[in-house]
Image 1: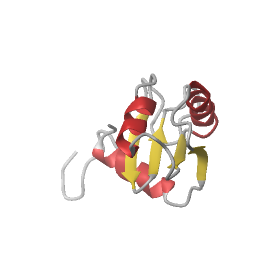
Image 2: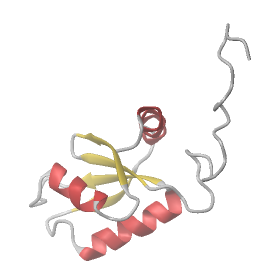
Image 3: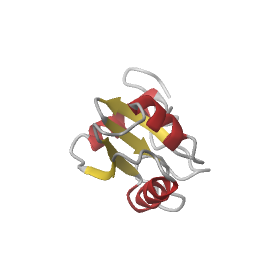
Amino acid sequence: MPSAPLRRALRSAGHALDPVVQIGKQGTTEKVVAQVTQALLDHELIKVKIGSECPETRFEVADRLAGEPGVKVAQILGRTILLYKRHPKHPKFEPPQGTPHPKAGAAKVGERP
């Protein structure tokens, strides 16, 4: 699970998103996993909608999808799962690896540098 500030930012950004992938009566198949992987590469943050006829619970689906390398569950709300996978070249929510966060090391209000 992502850190609390990152999770908060992801949930905020994911609020306006529409589901990109829907899981139906077949459940979480390999084709669904491939579709989720491609959608995460394209969008970095996606919503997955679980149909009422899905044989798996929402937590089983989330565990299955989070089992893929780099995929993190940001939120499970009802029958919707918000998934995040950091983009390898152009991350929107995290600074590139090896670069300090813009606010890291910044003095807080009232602190002396």
